[in-house]
Image (tube, rainbow, N blue to C red):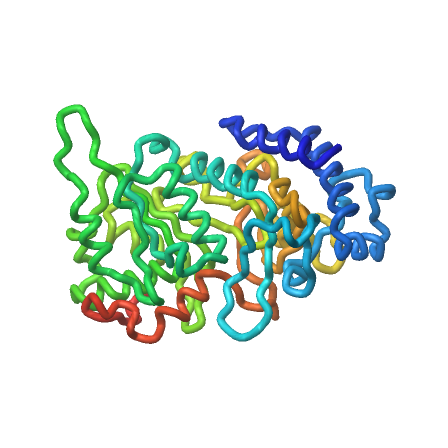
Length: 394
């Protein structure tokens, strides 16, 4: 199958609207994509041959060799000529070490995948309503190789209201500008109209530093009146909860954000993603408000939990290393082996309905945009345009 034909079918799947798993379709497309990537990405082909898993040997998607995320630091994993590159995303770097790179010769599938997931798991009934969006992240001109900033910018262009903007500039979080933007939203709409909802998005530790700044300025974390969000608003926080300086439990952060913004905790959605992937995974709380909080996988992806010693799938409910197969990764490698640990979330009948991320394997490198943000904002100057910053969230 030619790549353009394969991509057209994957793109059609992403644009279908309602999510529907289709095992036959996924198997067929995943195997076709493996054949293409084996043929056009020589470092990946060498790796697959060394494992004895060539297209002649592999019969199921589960047998496709997965590349460790660290390989994106060491090898140029792309299946096209370098001069065809239209964009390169790089992993967050907090030192002089190598950074992983995802090279793309098209953004079509990448952006279709992220918008489909955001509309399904975050925006829901807000699609087409143009909520005001504020991003606790650097803007595109300051972070042109950040996949997270590109995601936010794609979302802003597609669904954001005029005035949607970024509130982290030059490594500093502009708390006062963010507060004024929230305060300016019309809280007295005309009869029959709803308040304009707000979507706040940023790394988990950007929100930690925002909470610190608000607490320091007001003297109480319960001083939420100036920060109340309109009905229907929501928060997207992405990345882990461990920074360079401290660790904030996910439930503690959600509780604090819900109190500050006066929104239900189910309106606070966490994203699990990484630079090496073309797709992301979001909490289920807006698409399934009554079910347990877990990550949902788009139907063009597969998430498996593997025993690190054997490489075999762990029993449902057991802890395993997360492997992701992502059909959005057509130009690089679709099968990715992470160093993250996870566990399937089961329903009352014992069926897996999603997964939860438990953290990094012991000894694995700390990584991610959330840690990079914590480093930027931890110098005490992050909120200099407000009343300062503290370390009050425990």
